[in-house]
Image (tube, rainbow over all chains, first blue to last red; front, side):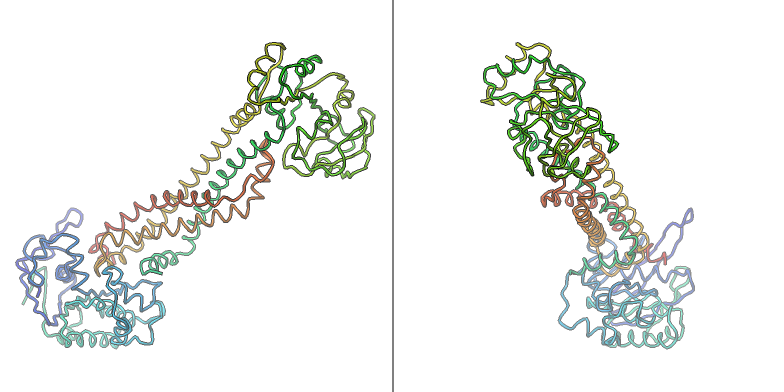
Length: 218
Length: 389
């Protein structure tokens, strides 16, 4: 489903050139649940951004569903992200003034897709937020905010969910709930790739990708 | 409300004070712009109306400054020059003149009230012809010791019909036989006496500051004026359209200045909008990065930000029009106090087309100011924005 061939990613930090990824070869199969682990600065987030077509390799090839992503134009990348990829962030990034329902529906503003009747409510139910539909983020707990962000990632029916430390800001009980939701999504056939610093959660994913100094170790 | 509009409104509501102050800047600028345009329009219309209402076609005055003549015609300036006594006969005998009437404008001390009254001497029998729009309570004077009072003079002096009023400087007492209804013009500030009485009081038995002339056929006015100026030395004639141009020229600089101030205020308001939106964009760069990640195109981001500027400018503009309309009376009173001449009537009447044009203009300027922040937001690199967290 997603294939990286000898992917390098370099960027400048002041006068210094940083090689965030060094010749990565990686293949993610449809329906996999993979965790990405590694120390800070290892290149996990850069890898996730490339897997999510948010960033492009400096060199090498990136394929998504057989398409050469590294040769795509900006507008094609937007369409790909919009229709096939769902992002979840550690900081949730909910819009403060919007209700849970409106936050979940946010990606639909850009895709111009009309959700099926009851679709938003159904997603909220799936993540356990049926009784919080009209609450704004300030009225939610951290776990509830992350569950809203998960529902938002699902609203366009993506093929893959990319989660960047989704439990990083949560206590263990809420972390467990979030992991259970991601696990269920995987069981329903969705591809899930999750960065985590929690080795126990990483171990429960079907596959663990360990990265260090921009190189995949296994 | 559409999703994107709702998002833009929510973004503005996040910083209510900032949004309110930015909107206030736009409201003030649009309010001033609307008031200035309304006033300029009202001024021109009022001036034309006032000159038409004189019932005269031109004035004959001693040779001098055209602006002085305009001031004389419109608000009775005391001009220290008089026409020769024979001029009135020459004018009256000119072919095509329907009637000619002498006018004497003078000052008379009123020590009881610590002021100097402006006296307007005129032939009472032609008063209705030269001031056809006046609403007079009582009667036009018919005897030498009767007076007609302008609204403001009567009100300040507390005089009503039938009251007697004495000028100690000339040791004469007059009876108020009529009071003119408020005209909102300089006419309100005069005491009107028969010309013969005014000439006697001023010790100038045949004196006239000007002669008002009405011609039988206005299309012949040019030839009548030429004939008159050739026949009578030491005079100049000023038509009402020349007076209008003269006043318009004097007023033009004040109008241009006020318009420039309004435009500067609008530019300042637009800079305020740009600053406010730009700050909001910088503060929300992570959020914008997130939106780009979940499928927003650069155009989507551009639209969201531009909608915010549009809302700010439109609401601010509408508020400015509302404030200017509500405060029109106050603004007009203030302008009347500081400007040497303002025609009668409402200067700041509400014109919906003008209001729309002002909001439209503000919208163009405001949206122009929003283009840079919107472009800046659309260029935010989602990776850097998200990493910025």
